[in-house]
Length: 106
Image 1 (cartoon, rainbow, N blue to C red):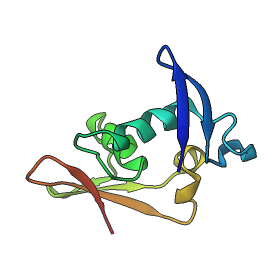
Image 2 (image 1 turned 120 degrees about the horizontal axis):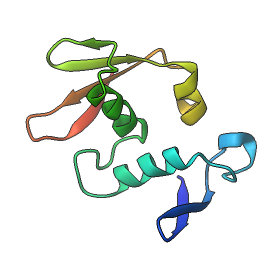
Image 3 (image 1 turned 45 degrees about the vertical axis):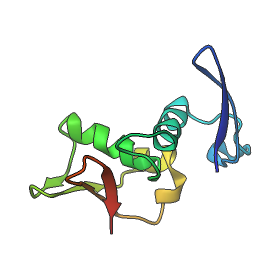
Image 4 (image 1 turned 90 degrees about the vertical axis):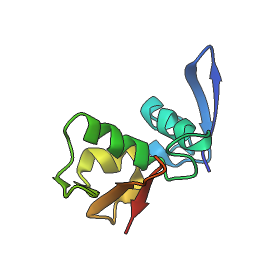
């Protein structure tokens, strides 16, 4: 679990991540943003941090496939740099449910 402390809304220090190989030191502030989004009530609550990341890409026209129900994204090197957990994944698929929550489907 990634735990970050912030001061005046700015990233300062995170624990529990191996991003950068320094045990959390040097965690990308963007990752901290997505970690924060999934911790609080809202459409991404309880999901993995890459769910709001990829959904944001979709809103910017970045989905590789949209069949009207499932959004599919190819996992690229830049995604793995931000989320090393995706290193063994080829794709991420998201669905926006009828209740408004966005969830990952496999």
